Length: 215
Image (tube, rainbow, N blue to C red; front, top):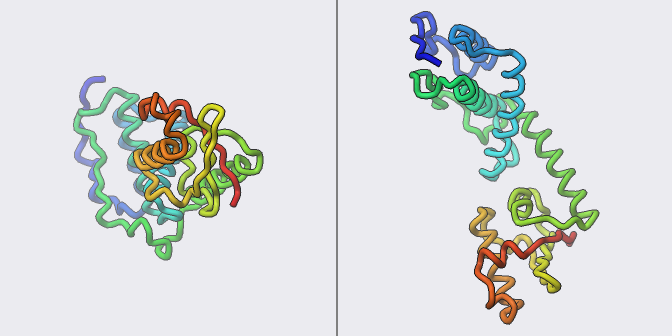
């Protein structure tokens, strides 16, 4: 798509960044001007962006997030996706607002906590409870992804071929993927030195599955 000059009446500084409705009305008018607004596609972008926003907040270790801050984050992702799918990135249409005037993301007394994120966490917690109740076998990606909502008393069973060993989930010092991998490999190498000596770290991780056991 050819570059489009933004007209002067699109003055983002006139918008109160905390006003979600005003910000979204500006976004719609702006992208209509660029010929990039499609109501159905934007609805899909928003659903995707809410999921992405929840992932970002969750992976930062937050159990709650300020509503206004979260919707700002979602709109940022929506804006980027509209430009990306419209081949308009790098044409001077960058996200025009900064988060400086927003409440702190952890402040849930101002504007309240995000219902979208709460509902997302509830769905995630329900899925986690089902995994534990049914003894479902999961992979390393799932072990890491569910990390912050795995109950502290849960034990992780590492299934390395026909052998298995367990450790308390709360023994993992941090829930970054690198630390989860390091901890799992150390546990397996300590439990099965004669088996693991023939494998690289990556091979050990590829050959291992997990089961979560309620403590």
